Figure 1 (tube, rainbow, N blue to C red):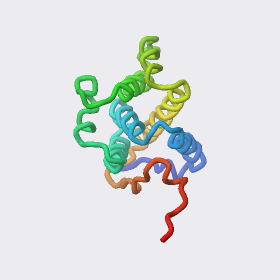
Figure 2: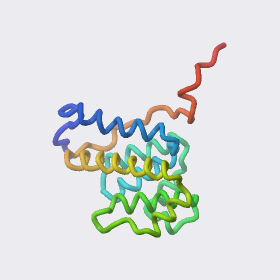
Figure 3: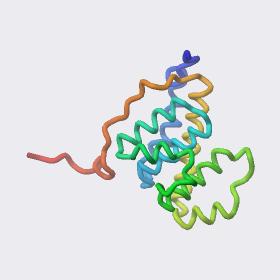
Length: 165
């Protein structure tokens, strides 16, 4: 498979704009683990090999188990996910597959039981971003494989001053 267009080179300002949403979501407090799960699930639904590769590598670098990643496409059938994660995954599926119909009220109510209003908006922004990245990567055939995750930084560590000796 050959890449059609390197979209980040051709439209760097557009990529920076989408990256801005990503940066906001990373700082939102939802947690990297939850974000990796929903990004991977949305990418599975969209069939984006590049993003599946990226987000499973990020998840593993952040400490996610292989078992949970392997079972993600069948998350409803396993005991491996918390109620909060299940609510987020169901929301991710409904938003990603929005062309099939509106998000049901029951699903919204379940999501609200586990996520605050702000968390739900932030989760939806994360889904808007990953669905955008999926469409760019699929349309322009971004080749999966070479992506390597950055070293994992524990939550809050980026705002702490460096340790002194």
